[in-house]
Image 1 (cartoon, helix red, strand yellow):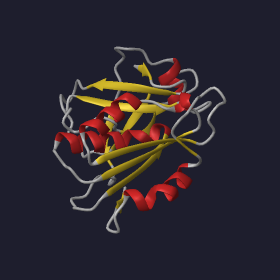
Image 2 (tube, rainbow, N blue to C red):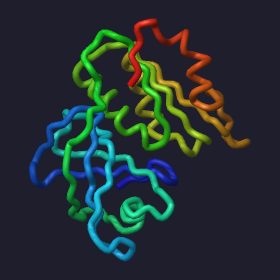
Image 3 (cartoon, rainbow, N blue to C red):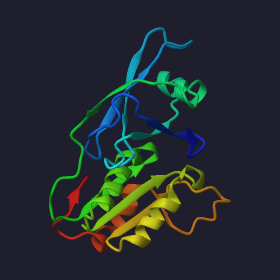
Amino acid sequence: LRDLTYDIKEVVLTLDEPGGLTFKAGQFIQFEVPEYARNPEPVYRAYSIASPPSQRDRIELEIRRVPNGICTTYVFDHLKIGDRVIFNGPHGDFHLRDSPRDILCVAGGSGMAPIKSILWDMRDREIHRKTTYFFGARTRRDLFLMDELQALEKERPEFTFVPALSRPAPDDDWPGEQGLITEVIRRRMTSVMSPRSEEH
């Protein structure tokens, strides 16, 4: 368990049974929330896998706290390192298709999870398609995994990472893009994408 921001937690599940999971980058699992004080019976919640398929023995999730949420209250306030949890999957049709086209990724908050899985999978499989990732946040404290994404940008010249703040705080001292992520995309779109771009 690791705090990525004040309201987003990284949860890494080491697989017990089965010992490995085969999935496509971009897919999700259904996480079982057991009975506890606020939850009278087990329920399932869907979370995208943030780790790449090459890591078959561990599943990484990025879970954002939802006020009074059944699952996020359990994860943030009750789940402990070493606890046994149950999930099923993988599920979903959101994944990278084989194509020579450029890729445009857009996400904010915990929506980074499937994008991170896809980006790391592309690195593992040596896929060198031109890719631009626009990540929207309100303030600097809502940004996370910046070091990892900036390192990937330096490692892969075909990859561009564009974080943007929509409401930077006065003391954020933010030198990057500002505005709603849709506005930032509109400003930069023609300079980063070709006419044959593919959105994901």
